[in-house]
Every structure is written in C-alpha cells, then in structure tokens.
Image (cartoon, rainbow, N blue to C red; front, side, top):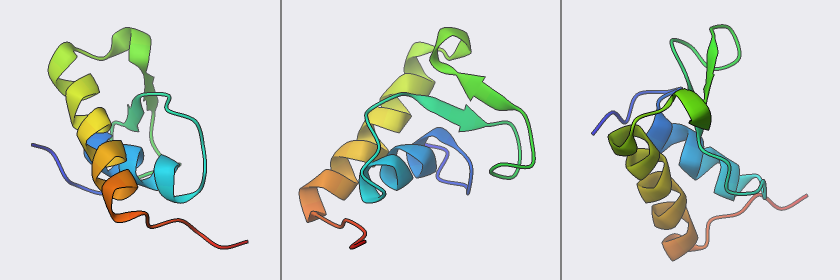
Length: 66
C-alpha cells in the first residue's frame, strides 16, 4: 500500500480529517505541486487505498476543529 504523502491512502485520510467528501484522487508526486489524478484514471487498487485511508481516519474520528 502506498502511504506516501500525496498517495491515495494519504489523500483519503486527509479528506476525512478536513471534512471533505469521499472523492478518490491522489497526486503523482508532492501534494498540490504535482499532477492530481482523479478517480476516473485510478485503478481498483488505488481506489481501495484511498478508501482504506478514509476509513482509518474515520475509525479514529480524527477531524480538524475549525
């Protein structure tokens, strides 16, 4: 599983943390400074990594307090 910063798992966890909706994506390199890969271009394994990151963050209930 790719847990690097900007990878699908990382982005899933970040989306949950910041209260964003479940919308699979990741970055080819560094977050926000490389190409964003949208769900349409992701394979099943990458979508599952995003889902796992989102679910793990949700399990621990870690959310940013605004």
